[in-house]
Amino acid sequence: MTFADGNFWQCIDAPGSVLIPEAGASVLGGVFTDPPHHEPGTWQGVRMITNVGDVLTLIGTDDGSSWFCVTGTYAQESGEVVIDFSPKGGPKDIAATWADGKLTFADGN
Image (cartoon, rainbow, N blue to C red; front, side):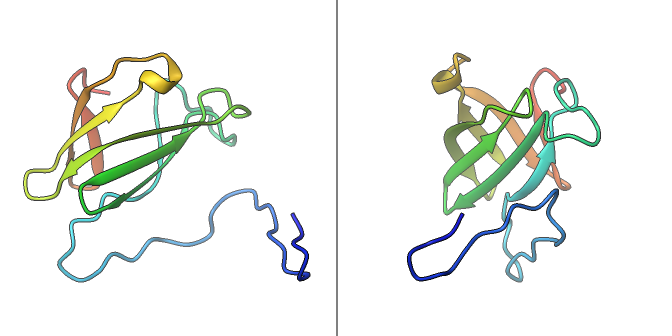
C-alpha cells in the first residue's frame, strides 16, 4: 500500500516483535491463536487483541482470508473480559478471563 506522500506499508508473513507492556500494567494485547480454528503456518485462527482502558478490540480470521472486528470490555483488576461476537454472527456477550498470558473462555477454549 503506497500513500500519496510516498510512504508505504509493506505486508509481512508474521509479526517479528513482542509487545512490551507498560510497567505494572495489565494489558490484554498481542497476537493469539484460537486452537479450534488455527492451522499452523497460516493466518487461519489468528486473533489480534488490544485494549485501551476497559475497551477491547479484537481483529481475527477463522479461515485465513476473511477478517472480522469485534469489541468488548476488559476489567483489568479482575481480568474479566466480555466480547460481543454478534457482528460475525455469534453471541453478544461471551465471558472470558485474562490471566497468565491466556484468554480462557467458559467452555475451556
